[in-house]
Length: 102
Image (cartoon, rainbow, N blue to C red; front, side):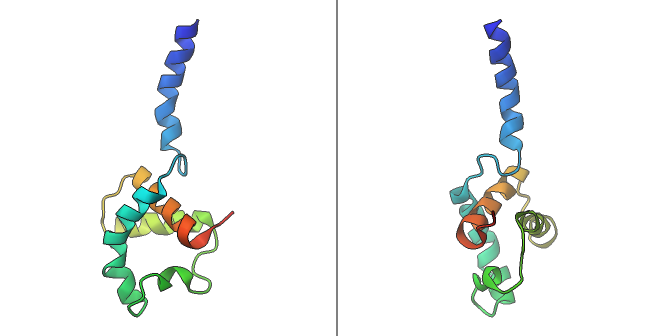
């Protein structure tokens, strides 16, 4: 009986880890974000102050919109080829540093 519980737990762990926001790593998110986003893309759009893109009024209003924007930039703008867990890490970083959505 104990073996069955252990097997179920081992099989379920990858599913839990893949959930958006589950164990996202903001430090890793910054490591992915900064070289891809700050050096050119955001600086161009924010008159040289790359962080200003996050602090402008009315930019993003919810965590869901932030997730959507990170995914859009990943796939359409930067073509960084981040995995979904990488996107979750970037969202965790931006959430921690700029947005603080509840």
